[in-house]
Structure formats: structure tokens, C-alpha cells
Length: 533
Image (tube, rainbow, N blue to C red; front, side, top):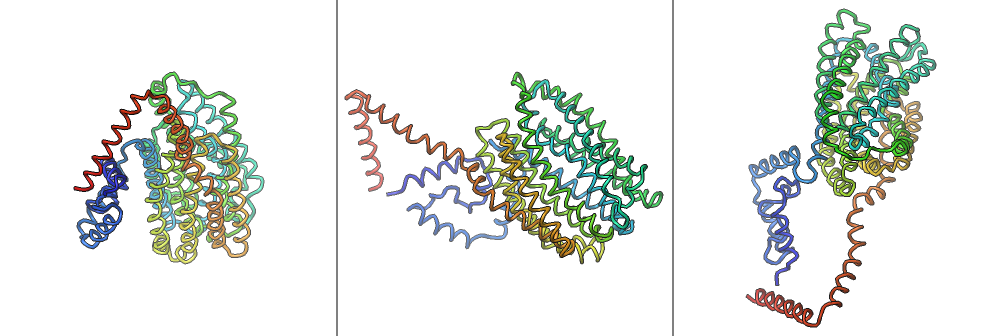
């Protein structure tokens, strides 16, 4: 007799969205798992037969369908994927433009100048991100429900970010500038003031992206950063002739300084009024709610900042400028690949805040999709590392390629940690966020310092890979609980539903019970007759 579970599964699959990635990955004619006459066994035989009959044209056609399904999300996960894809597009565009910028810099500036400029940029990211990157998570979490008070929330974030950037720059300048290191040129008062102003501008430039993400307009982030990347490349080559020693700094900061007022005109005059109308009468978050979130998430974000921005600063403090240039190019490419998982996690936080009930479903979709994207990207990066860095010069490939291979491998275990953190932020479990980020920061910084002194810049890559593997193992149980939360809740409710049904049957009148029994007997007879035929 045919197994009705398989037939029912086939019907459900045929009714699914045609753009579903899992549907496309099935062989032709195998939309449901129960296509065989005898259920699973015949289905497996038919699957093997169709694999043998596959042609190159059908494989290419299916690959095209897969790409279209990934790039055009539909259904319940559409907002999650659209926001994530916009952020990933921003990462890819920014990364490619940044790679082109440093490639031209390596061709037209001395390695020592490239090393000093990359060290300064690492410090810029670290100091500006102390508050800016810390508040991006808060904006993604609370802007969706702030309504008419969103403008005030954004302005407070800007003010806190600038003040922290200035204080952090002053402290940083007191402990750097030793002769022979990559920061030797920051020892003067004039250079220190210019550097502090640049940090404040970069803090605003970073945080305004968080405002755009929270407003569910991440596509503007892509456009903004694309224009910024093009502008700094356009300035780089003329400045190499006019001011060869400082051209790298000027080409980077002038476009950022121009972008800050332009983007905020867009935010406050166009996007905020539309957001207030869309949010309606939702109650805004309370001060205690925001404060509790920041207490945990800021700590966690600082730990994340330590693993992303402090590592190149530490390396720059221990190596000469030329060697730092080799490391920084590998680090820039590796962290660009890393950001793809962080983008998906940030989009998961936003959608989880909008609809907490669907968090587990969205988390499964986010993890599945980011692995489909990231596994081939990381593999290609590792395999092509010598060729990619060879574009900068033979010494970049010789010393930087082994580091890039290690960093590309580290992106895969880090993906598990990032998706877990995105779900925790959506649940406002900021103490757990801080714990995970803190443990990871201690591992990364401790192993980087130890292994860099012992192995040089290769030690930093080994330390990052080992740290991410340890963290992936540690967070896997918690991630599994997040991914299966809805299914466990449904399983817990099943006994209660069965008890309610039994109570309802017990309360039936004798006539109603006889009628239901007769209907069940008729259905069984029809099933037996169908099987005999």
C-alpha cells in the first residue's frame, strides 16, 4: 500500500515557492520525496537514475535557477534576505574598491608609506569604532520601534560617538609614536590634532551606516560606500604626485568628511519621516530597556572591535612598516570575507526585533543561506591567495599569502558564532553577547600576541584561526537551541493538544461518537480498496 506520508510530502513540496533553494537543488522531476511508486526506496532509485542522465545543459540550467533563487528572495524570509544582501553588496563593493585603493597605493607609493598609512587607518577604525560600532547594534535593535523619537536616538548616538572618539584618540597618542614603529609620525602636536579630528569624522561616518540599517534602508549604505570608494581612488593618483608622503591620508579622509553631512540630510529629511509613519503608534523603548541592552551589547561590541581592529594595531606596533604592509593587505581581504557572515547576523537581529515569534525560522534560513554563499567564497580566497596578493607585488605574495589562507579558513567557524550573536541580540540577551565576545577577544588577542612574537605575522593568522575554531565548538549547543526553539515549543504543546482532543471526544454524545466512528470506518475501507486496485 502506498505510504501516504510520502504522497503528502510530495504535494506539499509541489505547492512550495518555486524560488525555494531546496526545491531547485532537487533533481528534475523530484520535487517531492515520494515520487516513486513504493515511496522512499523507489525514490532513491529514480534519483540515482536521473543523476546518470544529467547533461551539462541541465546542470547549467539548474545552476542558473539556484543563483536567481539566492539573489531574489521571496516569501516570509524576503525582508531578512533583502536587507542581508544589501549589506553583503555593500561589503563586496567596499571591499573591492578598498582592494583597488591599496593595489594602486602599493604600485605608486613606497612600502614604508603604505605600511604607515595602513597602520594609521587601523588605529582610526579602532578608536572610531569604540562607540560607533558599539552603537550600531543598538540602532539596529531599537530604531525599528522608536517611531517619532528615532531622530533623538540617532543624535544622542552621534554625540556619544564623537566624544568617545576624541577621548580615545588622546589616550592612544600618549602611548604610541615610538621611533622605528609604524606610528612614529604621530608624535607631534599638529599631527595628533589632525589625527583626532579624523577619528571623530570617521566615527560619524561609521555610525550613520547603523542608522540606515535600522531604518531598513541598507541599500543607501551600499551606494554611500561605493561613492566613497570611487572618490578616494580618484584622489589617490593625483595626490601621489602632489603630496606623495601624505596623499594616502588625504585621499581617504576628504571623501568621508564630505559624505557625513550629505548622508545625514538624507536620513533626517527623507528617511525619518517615512519611518515614523510606518512605525505607527508602537510604544518606544524605555530608557531602562535601552540601558540594559547597551550595558551588555557595548561590552560585546568592544570585544568584537578588539578582534577586528586591535589585531592589526598590535601587529603594527611590533613590526617595521614594510612588513606591516604585507600583513595588512592579507588582513583587509580576510576581514572583508568575514563581514559577509556579520551582515547576515545583523539583518537577523533587525528581523528578529520586528517579529520575535519567527526568530528560529529566520535563524535557520540565515545560516543555510550564508553557508551556501560563504563556503565557495572562502575556498576561492584560500586557493587564489598567492595570485591575489601577487597583484600588489612579489613580496606581498611571499609573506602575505600564508596569512590570507589562514584567515579565509577562519571565516567558516566564525559564521556559527556570528549567527548565534545575531539571534541573541534580537532576544536582548546582551549579557550572553558580552560573554561570547569577551571570551573570543581574550583568545584572539592572547594567541595573536604570543604567536606574533614567536612566528612573525604568520602567527597572527594561526592565532585567529585557532580562536575561531574554539569559539565555534563552544557556541554550537546554544546555536542549536536557537535554531530548534519553535520545534521544541511545538513538541511541548503537542501533549496538551492531544489531551484536549481526548477530552472533546469524551464529551461527545453517543450519537456523535457513533457517527465519527462510522466515518473513520468508511475512510479505512476506501483506503483498503485503493490499495487493492
